[in-house]
Length: 489
Image 1 (spheres, helix red, strand yellow):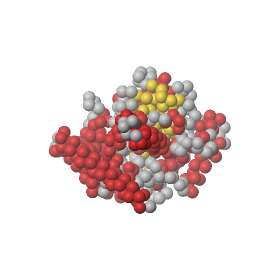
Image 2 (cartoon, one colour; image 1 turned 90 degrees about the vertical axis):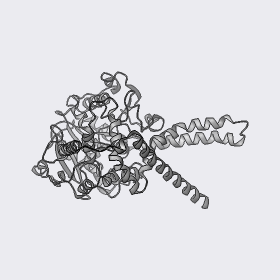
Image 3 (tube, one colour; image 1 turned 135 degrees about the vertical axis):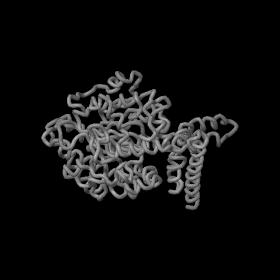
Image 4 (tube, one colour; image 1 turned 60 degrees about the vertical axis):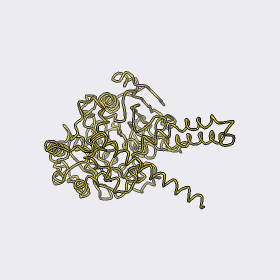
């Protein structure tokens, strides 16, 4: 008992020590490259205000053809989303889930791509809880999964006509939206006919890869420990075996930093004129991009100011939707960028990626209703994609039970392939595929080449004349010639 306590204590000390190390490391980098001391000019501040008004003023269109909307959850909190439709219309439904440190506005570049089926499908871009114009949660644990499930069900009810079996639902996720998408595809697969996910780890796979590497390294090290002279080479083999895990730990050092006490996390969020966030935005566009605009990115990240919080969504009132204004927690984040950053990083602390999800009775009822409707559908194809895999027991923890297409930028500086991607093919459901984009990085919906590939995929699945595609990678290669198929089922 005492040894277990000491082992646990040492583990926690190491965890937080590494977090402090990364905190000072980032601070040092900001000071070294000069971003820490830069200050916005009056013109910069004015442009920032203009961009926030453009994105978040509820009386305006944030993107061409899109309007602001709200959905009030059963717990009384509100999710803000933008959509290109006001009511049920023929065609599929595509729900977009963003990641850190973004909002629904991160999809602005993707929505301009010609391949996006704006005329054929209903496109819904939602702010995750604690981001953009959505209310803050007290904790970002599996309540986030409950909220997103309720939201997707509500969007299906609102936008999909009842008299058609051909309308499909797709969930597109990036970064945290991808992590959440993996969980939904595994534990609530009937929510969508297909998940389209980009650049974030499948948590169960990442843990399995970690355990496999540690197990192999331990076995090799035992040989060295038993006979150091005879098996001295085993020491270097142990280090080499652990290398992918060590590299991934360094790549995700910011996660340890986000688990420090609130004062450290909030300070990092605002330090050096938001150097951490500016660096994240800059990395998404690349060194030579002519699309990177600092104030636009910051407006997308921080959501509405107090001025926009006083506006009302006329379209929501006209359609009888509750909650036509931003909630009070959104105004609290608008007053304090540190509080806003603390909420954004709550996903890294509160266990939404890994805690067991015990579904509420309401969520179980919602999912059962979808499965029942699908099983009674006159369309065999719709029936098969919605419920076939969810009726069987998982043979692999975290196994995906819905068709999933993964588009992965290989030059991801946050999610290394050995831990976050290798072995994912074993988790795929039938009619799933993984495509690698060798020249792209983490920000697949933002990069010029990668977003064209993503738009192509969405268009082929969701447009009104969509037909089954034998191999999506082949279609992606038409716009991204170097794309490679990693796995297909």
